[in-house]
Image (cartoon, rainbow, N blue to C red; front, top):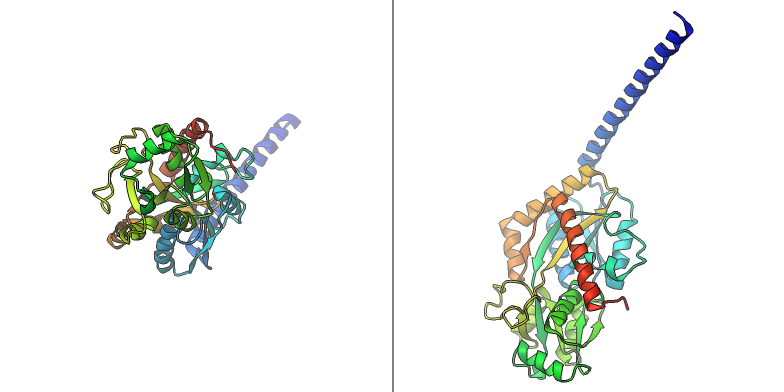
Length: 336
């Protein structure tokens, strides 16, 4: 055998050896990943929620956490981390160890932040991966009964008469409650001052007092106060009426076309979380969302389960991010 033939033979041998090593590594990696999912969870899991206790997102997160604790046999605890439109919490989870023990439960405000915070310390689409939406729930337009508004048209007429004299609340700049309010404001062609709070409870308190003129509040938080007469509801923000308030019109029915908005709550994880862990988590959460007991529980607070495949949810997040960016530009929304 000449030297050239010997070199070619050695090269083929080295190539085969390399392929064998690569194949063994891949198989070992697959086995390790599967074993990780089988062993997970070995400790408590943390849901980081970007809003205060009692907010719509928090209420849904706690309901899921309770059922997931039973399903997985490990405690699921809530850490409320409000501020900066949810970006503090999102950044914490984006940079957390991707082991399935630190998860983000965020509202639809998650897709707003890239448009209003240009220097985010994390990438909304690449550093976090969606697991599934958890629930959809209406926002309701509430006011203090002391304000004396007859209906939505009456409120709009009064605001147009004195455009600099009115304000509206949100649970934070870029939150779902804020975007709902801005979509309504732009569609109605009115001008008013935005007053952001750190969470829904504080915004509701200020609305009840009359210091805030209106607030698009999550129905899960506002419904008890509406029933007690502490708040007056003028409209529902979603495309359809709420079963809990069947006589309350939508904002579109009230005469403001293009103002409809759906508030959703979803679960996300650091993007490098092992897929088998994500798959196991998705399967357990969707099982909870599809259970008759959980559907009834959400129905009692005016919400509805919103299960979705992970791939569909991530596509939805991308689409919503693009759509909301246009609204943010049209409404002139900026971080405070």
